[in-house]
Image (cartoon, rainbow, N blue to C red; front, side):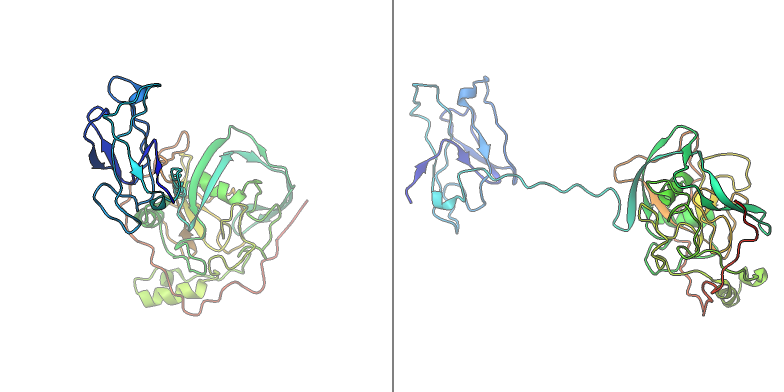
Length: 387
């Protein structure tokens, strides 16, 4: 193949620079593997400008022999005005066999960093802090003095206030956020916050938790409009706790009692207990600490509990327990973590404030229960239902 004259100078990882670009002695300056932009010379004469492109690494500079071919002559090249030939400006000769093609290589696209870690779900949602729904079947639960709704009218969600845009990352499973894992027990809000902080995360705002639970269709249960104890781990028969043993300072005594009470299932083991956003076990299994957006006179102050654990309580997305202080611990209380997407500033719900600072520390050891009973075979029957 014969040699050709090229009107442009191709270099890779090097720049040739002259003092004025007109017959000057070129210098070779390393610049890295980049595509050099159009460069105007002093005086603004675009007709005497140099253009830089990238070619394969096998093309080197004068006097350097490569494995791809012979030496390459390097010189400055300036575009000449019509009818003018500057004989003092040498040209560059390139061996075609040393070049893949006469076209500059395109830059490879750089993949954007995902907004959330792979074990978290990124949720963007226009959240409504206050909704109204039509309940078709209710039950008054006397032991807990609560009214439960068993069946909402599909599509009856009505937003009663201005929506707030949310963008956040949330753990796919309850802490330790592993499918098949066992959540911790006997943890306070402070324990949850410290543990999340140790992972570069935080406890979820209750708004975030609800948005993840209701999903894009804003259903009252993560799986739909009707309560169903075959979908999530709820409605298990009550086991009377021996609280002195559960709170015992003797670890063996506490472990035996906590194991006897444990009616949980491994995280993610009930495939139907997943929201429209792909987050598991939000209702049932373990109650979960959150940080409340609303500041009022409730005993829980800035904290709250969501999900309702494995018993027969309000195991829906919106209800929240606010009767326990942040330092409260119990045998069916755990948590999951949230965080801002990469590059986003810290989110605080409008009208709210950040909770107290907690030092990062792993304060949620994962238990290994001894022969736990698991969910009861028979489920709690509704005490009274009415349409």
